[in-house]
Image (cartoon, rainbow, N blue to C red; front, top):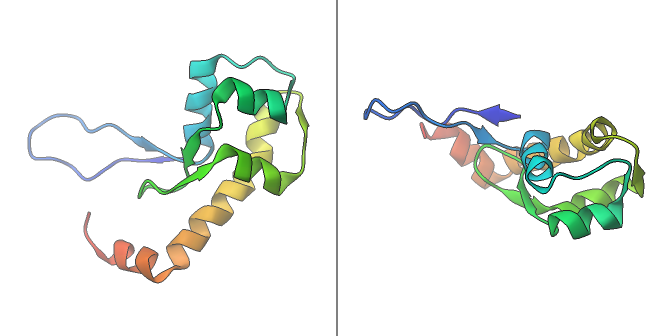
Length: 109
């Protein structure tokens, strides 16, 4: 997922903020991970990155996300992303339901 940050008045086009599987996909592209891949090998190749799961920039370690799905082997990148998507969504929903998340939703930035 991704969302555009608020517009600036400087005329520059803002960059998108990637989170969830879109943020993980960026890590995968930079590391050029080859599939099929095991969960341990994936963590070794990526270095267990902190992956943003919401537009506010909240992050979770990839190892924590992988622990929640209990899969050890991924035949394709699409299989990995499909398996992890519900976990990132659950993190995002929990953050949005917190008092801090509700306050952030009220603020215009």
